[in-house]
Image 1 (cartoon, rainbow over the protein chains, first blue to last red):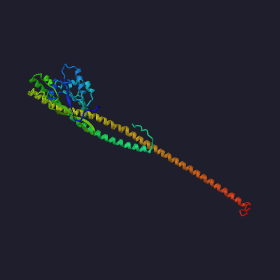
Image 2: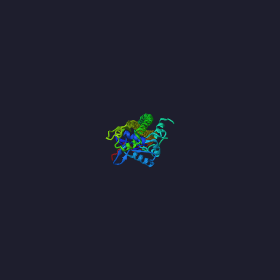
Image 3: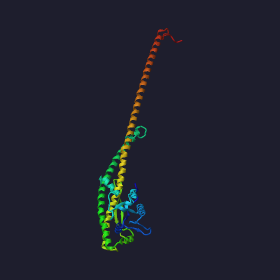
Image 4: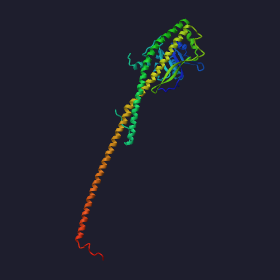
Length: 124
Length: 245
């Protein structure tokens, strides 16, 4: 089990890996953070030309940074790195799958949702 | 499956020690059971909330994405680039708090807003942009709530598993073992007592036998002495004779 290494009341960023529209929207809402000196951002815009390795690298980096609390990720992108997400067991940062404009949202693919359904004893 | 017993010397002291251990283990077991129950109650509540909130989020997301489509339609396709370029410091962050349920620390998130000097979009005005921002801000609140529920869900799940494991370990392994040890010690003590009792009886028997033999010997001695003194009386040596020589 992961050891909690945050202080009570600590403030952290919300990061986002998503398609253009999703990321733009959230940046407008104010989650974007860009550290000019280190050239580090907390978001990744993914389109059809983005390499899988870039997505992997972004996810690995966000999940190991100590200043990020939540990773928002479009579900279709989550599918691409499903193997990474299946092995991911940390509580913080939390990974939250969100629907995207073109690909909707399948509750059967979201691992957390599946667990919830299982616990409630519902069958599909 | 009854486990074996603990290796120990059977004595009254160890018996007392193990009785205390049994009491401790039983108390621990009931406390842990209560903890598991409390955790499960909180867990069920969380489950329902998580499911409904996530479903709500899906509806909100559609609305938010639609608003972006609207904005693009009126303001052109290049707002994305402009927004990305203007990102500096985060205006919203998530605050992590610790919540305590029956001794388990649960992380809870809360949305925090900051005033930064850079307000991306204020300069870019436009009602559509503002609409997008509002829709996504509302969405963000929901997201933070869901993320919070999700982390609590995962943490609680693990905590419940661990607690149940401990309850079972106590119930099926530790307590039976201690009970077996106590039974063993009591049996051994009884056995020792029986041996002691038997030994006592045997010694008594031997003593009695010796006492009887002594008595018989004394009686025989007494009879011999009597016979000897009678012989003396019948002989010429009279006790009245003048012995002064």
